[in-house]
Image 1 (cartoon, helix red, strand yellow):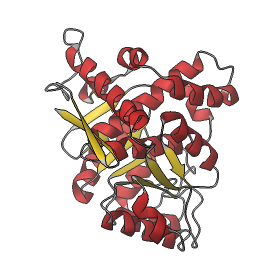
Image 2: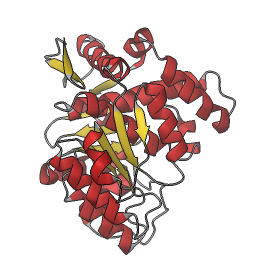
Image 3: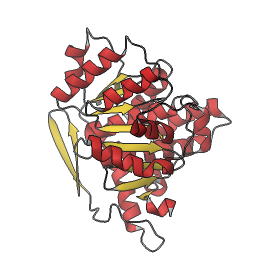
Amino acid sequence: MHTTCYGGASETAIAIDDETLNQPETAANDEKSESWSQLAWTHLECVRNSSSAPLIQCITNLVSMDLVANVLLSAGASPGMIHSVEEIPDFTPKVRALYINVGTLTPAWLPPMKMATAVANDSKRPWVLDPVAAGASAFRLKACLELLTLGPTVVRGNGTEILVLFNGSANANFKGADSMHESTDAFEVAKSLARTYGCIVAVSGAVDIVTDGERVVGAKNGVPMLQKITETGCAVTALIAAFVAVTPSQPFEATAAALSVFGVAGELGMCSAGGPASLRMHLIDALHSLDRIAVLQRVKIANVSWYVS
C-alpha cells in the first residue's frame, strides 16, 4: 500500500507495506497493528511536513470554533473560519479540505454551507460533514439530509446521529448532541449509508467505527473524560478533514488514523489533567508534541469484529 502526501505543488510518496491492513488484531499477529500505527503516524507527519500547512475551511458551530482552530493548529494544519457567501467563491478553491458542522445551524448558515460544498466539489477538494444533533428538529434533519446528498467525502457522527440520518426521521427522545446509542448499534446502518452515498462513515463511541461500506475497522483510543469537554467531537472531525486533505485518495485510512491519533492525544493529556478543563489544555499540548514512538505504541485500530465479537 502506498500513502501519498499532497503538499501543494509537489507530492511526496511514502510507501507502507500494509497487506494485512484490515485483518483482526490478535496476540499472535501484531504485524497489522504495527502497520496501522505506522499509517497513523504517516498521516500526522504528512500534515506537519506539508510544504505549507494544509488550509482547512471550517464552517463550524459557534461553540466549537476555538477548539477546532486550536486542534488544527496543534496538528500542523491551518484553520480558515470562512462562512460568508461573499467570500466562498474566492476562498474555498484555495483550501485543501472543507469541514461542515451544523451544531448551531440557522437558516442564514445553510446557503453558505451548500455553496461551499458545491465549490469544493467543483474544485475537487474533499469535504467532511458533522451532522451534530441531526434529529433535534425537522429543520435540522432536513438540512443534514440535504447536505448528505451533496457528496461528502466523510460523514462523522455519534451512534444516534448516524441512525437518524439512516432512518430519515427525528427522534422524540433526542438529547441534543449526546448520543443515546453506542457506535456498535449503528454498525450495519453506517455500512449502508456509506454504500448509498459513496462516502466514508465514521461513528464515534467507546470504539470509533469507520467504514466505506465494505471494509470496517474500529479505533479504540481515548479516555471517557473527553465526553466532559464540549465539542471534542467537532474537533476530531476537523482533524479528519486535515488528514483527508493530505491523503485525499485514502479517506478510509485517513479517517481511522485521525480518530486514533486524537484519542492518543487524549490519553497522554489525561496523564497531566486534573479534570475536563485542564484535559482540554493538555489535549492540545499532547497533539502538538505527539511523537512517532507514542503513536506506534498506542494506536489501536483493527478489524471491528475484534472489538464487537
